[in-house]
Image 1 (cartoon, rainbow, N blue to C red):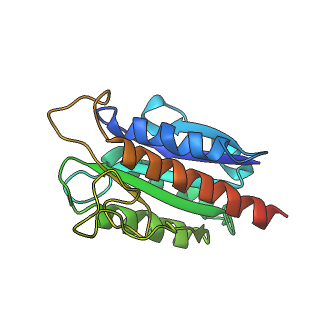
Image 2: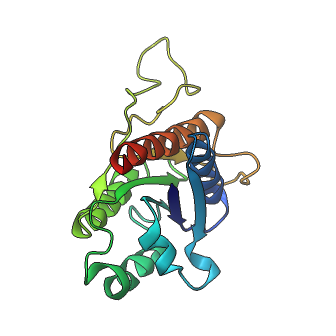
Length: 188
C-alpha cells in the first residue's frame, strides 16, 4: 500500500514534519511512505495515481499555502483532475507556521477543498485538543486543537534541528498512521 506525502518546505521545518508523517505511515504493516518535495523538480504523476492515499503538507505563509504547493495544485489539473484520477483516494494535510495561530486553519481548508475538487476522501485528526486545560501542557498531542489536519509551530529564530517540538512531530506521525490505517480499510 503506497501513501504519498506531497509537501513544500521553505526552511526545513515542514520537511521535518513530513518525515514524521512518513514515520507514522511506515508504522502500519504493509504501508510504504513516499515523500515528494514539490521543490525538487518533476512531479511523479503516475506514482501519485498509483498511490492509495495522498497527504499534503505546506508551511503557512501569510495565512495560506506556500506558492510552490499552490503551483503543484494548479499543475495537477491536466494529469489528475481532468479525468478525476484521484477519485476516492484518501487525503489529509499538515502545516507549520512561525506563529502559534499563523492562520494555519486556512491552509488546511485550502488543502481539503483541493482534495474535494479531486473527489478525494479527506481524513482529519481523531485527537481531542491537547494543551486545553489548566493542568495540560504543550507536550500533549494535538496541542493546537486542530480537527482538520496536523498543525505544528516552529519559532522563526530556531532551526529545523530545534523545532517543531516533539508533540507536534508525534501529532504528525499520528496523522500518517491514521491515514495509512484508513487507506488499508478502503483497500480491503
